[in-house]
Image (cartoon, rainbow, N blue to C red; front, top):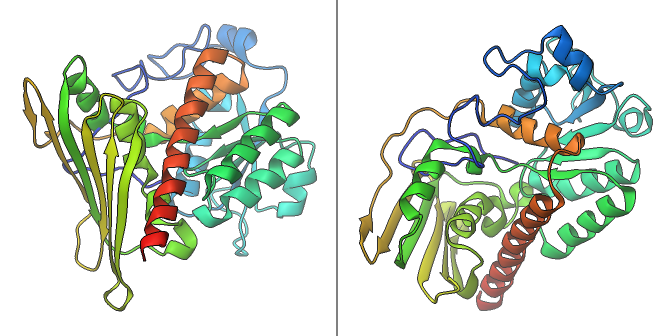
Length: 337
């Protein structure tokens, strides 16, 4: 399940864009200044039939997804049919609750947004792909590299879009880091994340629940090799610390630490050393606005066939590389315990 953005010292992202409006997908004839479609634009850009969407899970991420599906820009292409929850909640914000079985067999539903705890992602994705639905899922899509490979293969067999959300690549802090890193020779770096305890049974081994940090490192420095990984786990204190040593293709060392326990504040700590200087913190670069909405716009582009095969292949390669590293880290930590 995706984490909502931090507003403290962290990193920020952008997928090929900077400003909030300019980062939204360039759907033909769309007026970005008003973020709504004119009648002329609607006629030329709306599909003959909107994509019917069901949201699975209505926690924090699911609630934000429901809100964004009502955005005028998105509603030109997406039609919110309802939501699925294990709880009996009835109507939420005028959105009806439907059963999982009805969502899977409904001809109205073309797309499923999976916003549940990470441990259930794989099963939901598999069910909706088998039913012929497109899928948007909060990261990570699965808690093993092998499972992720199977899901990508299933999506290809069914001819459906499988989109793993990565809002951390749409944050202002990540965009700042990208600019700082560009063109510089890396000597060494570290990324340490602290937070309160998280249930591994629901959200997976720390290399998976923290995969957004790993995605940052891969997106900034390219494919990485795993050198070592250790886990300190004091269950009686609800404390854990995962320490991972990685290496870039140029043999520059990178360390990644996930540390969680009572009283630890949620924060990222960056230390990057270049041949030309160092970066020890990321300044406050503003509030991350509409990042889930930006991610949804990218998904719309995919549904409309507006993303090149090359870009789709590069994204898939990055996602699978991170999931493979996470699986290897988990295996290495378990072997040493």
